[in-house]
Length: 200
Image 1 (tube, rainbow, N blue to C red):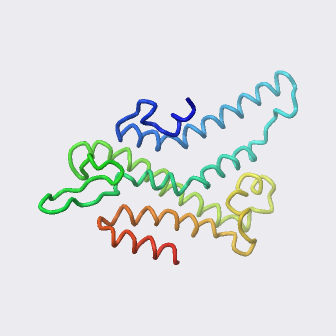
Image 2 (cartoon, rainbow, N blue to C red):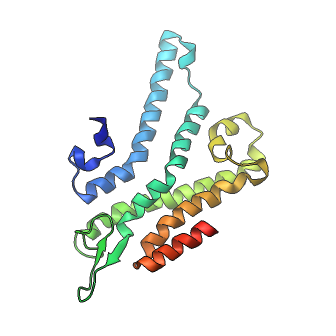
């Protein structure tokens, strides 16, 4: 059933760790499919001399980056979900995950998932933000080149030419919506942080 792709627990991945691992490796898996598609088409186009299978690597890269841009806020939220905790009522001095109330934060098995979550933070938040920022910085000098237009147009196609850099604040807005859910434990501060982010 194709529906189990979107419901990991229905495919037998019942633990939070399995769901987190799927989230972290999901974009890498999609990238692998794109790479295998490109290599397969290149082999067939050379072997059978079929011209339309000679895919443009820049266009294919742009399609993959567009998927990452479209789902970035969701991936960031799922990556930070390990840090989204809420306090128990007194006298219980403990925190539980918002996604899995049966899992206590900052103790026991939570630390087993910590390294996986930090890997996701490094790749999908720190590295991705640096990558998008770098592309936006070099865009004015590189955009006249056809390969750059094809490969990275997903970062600029939605905005006017004089505000080509808007991919950065839009990306950061989605990131901070999840970030405030992770750093604040009480609902008041979570809501306040989200409202400020939406108003900026």
